[in-house]
Image (cartoon, rainbow over all chains, first blue to last red; front, side, top):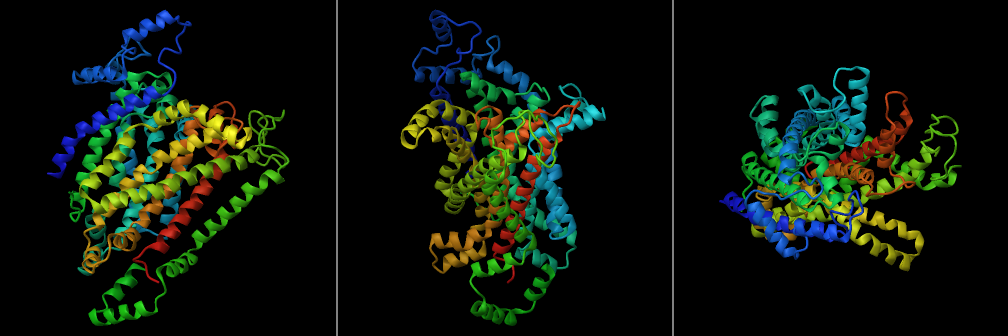
Length: 304
Length: 326
């Protein structure tokens, strides 16, 4: 029931976000045609504005935009004028989705076991080394990890391609560069979740019942310990799936991440709002799933 | 440790009850116990010492150093030696001096991000999770909306619309010297606006799982006020994850600042931050010649500082854990 309500609420929420994004990008001074190659005469600019209906009042433009959305049309790009926003998303999104999923898998696949291990070995050498690695991963930004990985694995060793997006081998370095940072964060959150769960009464009960240590840790503690990681997973996945500006730039990957930054700086209005909506849909749905999983993982959580 | 406590707890009902009564009479206040536990944590104390030293270095180095932040020289790309301890950069500037100035910006940015996410994020998430129902929905949808509007867009719009206004106001009120800090203020506003959102979600998740526990129901049955339940019973169980997430927020905010600067939206050269120094070093990465000190020096400082913050956080976390022993 609670989730049905939440699901129904998604639509008005998206409308609100689209309206806010629509208004927000218009507040910034400058316009989409400021950086034209030739200094455009007022006539040309007026014609361009008329063509894209930018001369209408804002509310009329917004209604027109919503009408397009209802037909699944995100509108034309004002910067790449031979393409529609739909074209650009259709070309870039699959690439970003694959890269994002790989990086997400890497982050969780490395982060959860590492966090689990460091929590179980708390105060021992394993914890020190593991925690150090996790913090190191959190401290080194993608624009350092990326070039370093390229230098070592692509240029010196020659095992992997330097850039571009062609074969599965091309995905290895970008996945590492994108995922390492998040694996460190996941490991820290997992460690914390595990530490606080191991103090719980039901763990003591399980030990008193004589359950084996692995059974206690994996069957009983893990479900609850993973809660902070799950909370973080929603926004993380939404972030990763919509592409990374830095990584796509370094590896020359034709994803969607570079467009968000570029279109904001170009004031490419339909492009920005389209990308914001795409991100918002992913985020809201994923957060809904996260909230759903709370009550599955921890039966004491009651919604509503 | 854990086994010891279990043995105590398994010690039978009556002795347990009398032990609790005894402990209640003799045990010092929770804050005093926390401080004692903290003092026994060697890594946390060492980290605290390191951070104090770092603060001293940041304050004193500009006076001690023979170089200034922006003075250029012909000694480009000097590797570290007795004169330039961390070498020089592309314009012959002393890297160590730039690091000392950069530390101010980076640590300030980190502190603003952590402060906002502690004050707003924790309150927001705790209230949403505890009250539940309609208010929870309202508060969390606000978080979703803010989250959905990408912070890059937000910062660009903020700077584009308000920078001129603020600059002229600052010049009028505080003089031209402060006009350049207008950009910095927007940086803080933009970072502050986004840094608390995940914290709110995480805290809410924890509070949701805590609010129907037996000890909460018990204190509610005893007539405790909502504020008391939240502050004395629920939040002590959340501090652990809050501290850990704060120690994650600091690096992410510091690195986010460098990302914005990389886009030309943050601080501008010759001002520096650790992130922008690392970014400058990364820009010089090429397979032909290695100017390793340009990355290694600022990155080492960043990593050491964050390691110290994390160990300090771990120490605080253990000290504040309501279930830990004396």
